[in-house]
Image (cartoon, rainbow, N blue to C red; front, side, top):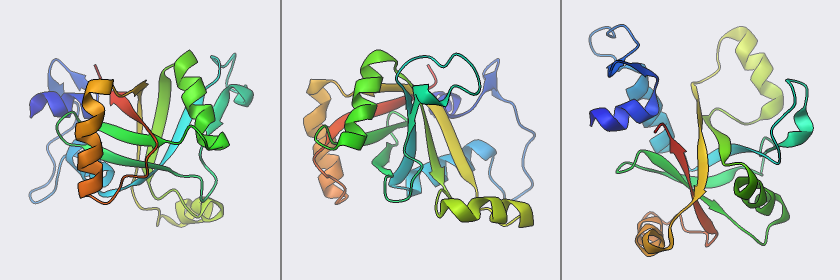
Amino acid sequence: ADKAIDKMVDVEGGKINEEPPEEGKLFMVERAKNLVASHRSFQLATYSRLPTGREDMDAIHTSVEPGLAITGLFDPESCNVLLQLDPNDPYESKHITNAAEHSSASLTCGHIEPKPLIPVFTRIGLLPPVVRMVGNLMEVPEGEVAGLREMLKAKDADKGGSLFWLEVGG
């Protein structure tokens, strides 16, 4: 269990960098894991090339528009997020192409829609929790695909796309 937690948050010397929570409350890592596990829609950002600076947005391909969220599922065994990307969808195929060039990616879940209201909710302090994960977007090895498809079908979440992991941590 500690290894799974290490993959979800920054650790120092094997210990979570967080003060113990109040009684009856969870560590941030447990709250984040619950949020990721409860979502099936994610925003994915991949890179066509490494950005040259903070303003270099042409290198980034992201799914921030409503209706373009990526379908995914948290795998509790590996603590990675399984994503389904359709190679026939021009939008999702761009993520596949980018992952072949640069595996670095970020994934967001939580309150990600409606995008125009997020600044308003933030100003008045009503924005629900959001989790952002950074990792490597890797295609699932062929030997693992069949078992993962069965897991997706059991959860009525299989849309038939190519399977990728967002591998967090190391």
